[in-house]
Image (tube, rainbow, N blue to C red; front, side, top):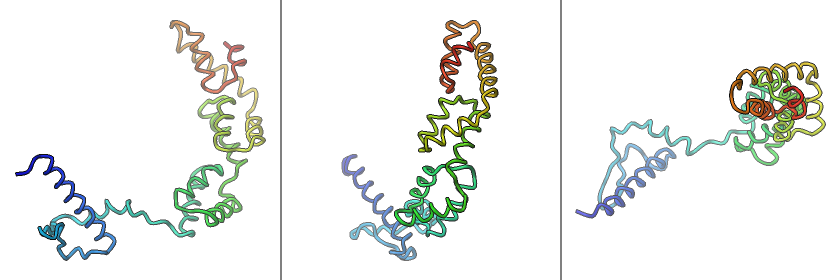
Length: 209
């Protein structure tokens, strides 16, 4: 018998050849009904009892690029799910395999048909993150910049947040954090740090605390 290392090499060889045959069967190069030797000198037919659904495991390796019409339909569904910014749309098009002029045409169609709108996204993002996630304007501004939103649209979105509602929320969060850190060392510093991390302006936080 060979050494353990030699047996390991032989096993790897036959494993790779077996996988190669499965791929060829999936592509129609080989007829799965005809046993194919893994090694010309040692016939090793595929096990007929092996369930062919194994081919399904290989399908993701041979991913089919959608046609432009199919990609457009997928993108319409993608944009309808929630508001999308232009950067997200372009990233998704690239993930679908759309390139160059084709990607640009689909992008323009979606934009002209109102499936996405940069201003609408900025307004929805700012309002949602403030009301639901309790983010401050600093964090909202940073996140919108990361998404490539135009500076004037960022400022417009931030201005749309009611000032009194903003201050009221900050006051509520300050009281909540004070109660949470009550009795702990450096409770005041921890409260300040938590609110600044949430994106509220340091000067407003220090004034409220």
